[in-house]
Image (tube, rainbow, N blue to C red):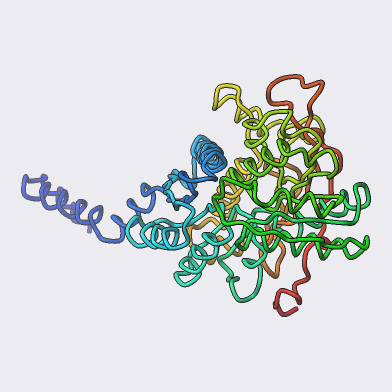
Length: 418
């Protein structure tokens, strides 16, 4: 018996076409599909808080430029699964309360995925308190010892900057054997200054260094003339300027004008490129200090040459400053964490960052497991007054401390369990 012929398929009617179209649209418009589309198109937001106004403004503005460069590189390379990054820049006004308010606003209102920035020990701790509570990654790019201690640390806390113990220790080991053991300090009266003095005094014990005075001044001081006769009368071998930004520049200018350099060597834990550019060769003559980065590293560090060339191309031939470079590294590290984790979830990105060994701009670095402190080199630099090749050729690198956990306070001292 021959098979019954199959019935022809019914011709598509207008009603069937509309029904099929409606079903397809329902699939596309389902909540899951819409969430997927949003996830692929929503930018990865990085809140970036720095003191754009106040005595640290020049350094902060360079941090923004460098952070923007890191975001541009990430986006030009395609981002993460097509998602681009966006930098949300805010002014913390060098005020801890303002920093906390802006951080909370970035997380709650602007839906920032990550936070980076800071140029003060006080503001970074207030920012970290907000991000820690909300389990959002914060990458600090300002010096602090406290942020590594167990009372302030969280799995979401990363410290890309040097810390005072590391910086002051490197400068002390270089300068105290060369210039003398009687040390006077002119200190900004807040955490940065206090921690720097502690670092110098701790390192100085090895060389028999003694403190003849620790004279403290308020943040944002303009007149240091009342302190200088007292310092001169003490006849120290070394005057350490434990201050930063405009405070440091004003103190150094006035100490130079007062004639202190004729009897006393002036050093500083952080010798700033921006301050040297503003102050000039005469004011800075003979001054030695530490830094995390100097563009002149490009002669011996290939990663520095690559970074400098990108910065020059982006900003009309300018070179990056020390703190500017940390802005680049702080943002780039969290974006690399996103790529490594294949996620924007702070927990997964934190785990990826803790495993990273990176070389973004200055040579090898990694985050120490117990406190997420960036283990990195410290440069000792001296201001140049002769033989400068151009306006940016202002320092000689006289020594480099290689990256070593041995130069940091131990995890146990910081309160972390082994």
